[in-house]
Image (spheres, rainbow, N blue to C red):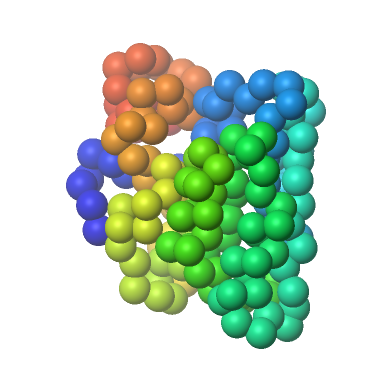
Length: 186
């Protein structure tokens, strides 16, 4: 779904997540929310961003086995606060294959003023996707897993409003020439 100009290629979902985290200007006292099902590399990137800025990493504990979508919504709801600046949510969790109820979770996050980054590493090729319709700010995914593209094929989608300050994790040529231009050079 969506417009081509809202998508860029990345090496993988983790590279897309890092681009978002390195582009955000987190401040001391703000919080970044992840879950205890968050992929380790993504959690490490979030912890690194928090450590550098003085923000705090908050981990929501999802029940497993999960009795239903409402259990995940309740767990994230308990972990959100007015200080939550960013929530990083999996579309399909890596180790447990839970499909999180993103529309409900994104609405909760919006309710406290948090931006939302989706780690969709396992979604392309396994479920029908309309990424823009989810309502997140960013969506990072792999194409080398269930989409069967070669390794090193990932994507990052960004809502138009979230593109101006978004840069690749490795800044190179074409800085400030636009969202797709900066990522295309890499």
